[in-house]
Amino acid sequence: MKTTRIAPGTYPIGWRHQLPELARQGIDSFLPREAYMEAFSKAREVELGGFEMQVEPVAVEALMGAIDDYVLEEICDVGGLCDRLDEVLASSGWRLPTEDEFEAAVGGGLFAWGHTLPAGSPYQPGDFELHQAPTSRGLMLPHNSYQVELVRAALKMGDGGSAVCGGYPWPVAWLTLSPSARVPESMLDDVFIWTEDATVHPVRSLSRG
Image 1 (cartoon, one colour):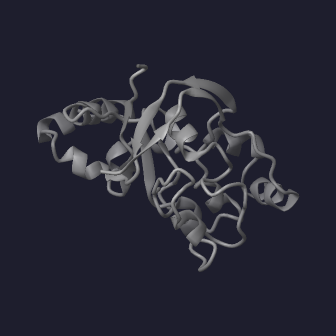
Image 2: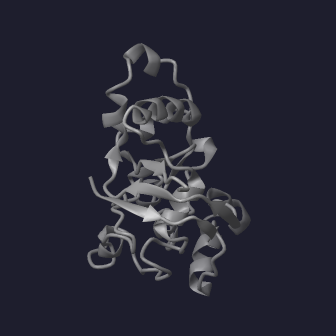
């Protein structure tokens, strides 16, 4: 199992990015910008202890296979799912990353590949390869906006394909792939709808010794 280490320190994360005017116009034609920006974590600076993260994503459904069906039936929200998955991961010394840890590990940029905002759609040949490449720390991330990444306790880097299938204006579909993007709580009535293509990058804290 390949892992990457994130050193302890202070990390600037969250939405703090300036978009080109055309991109801002595209967002404004879709939804008032202030309302749309609620789908992103807030700009913040966090102090993190060192941790180790698995490079390859793990399918959430594979982890759910270790949970009894009657226990799954009692889960009604993302927090409850996270509680159970942490129990599964703890048996091998791992846990879910926090949202802060995940964003710091991905690099804190507008996208995992940097600040380049491609034209067109995330499914347009050429530009999509940006998102398929490993990050600067070697992490392999979900490869399209239909997938999501589970952290404690949110779903990130995807919207279930709503932007692509809904024909939302550029650059809305691309921005769902930002590490600071998170699925709004209003879309999480049935958490299991999101688990089919969800992944997680388990972490474990590094000793201070």
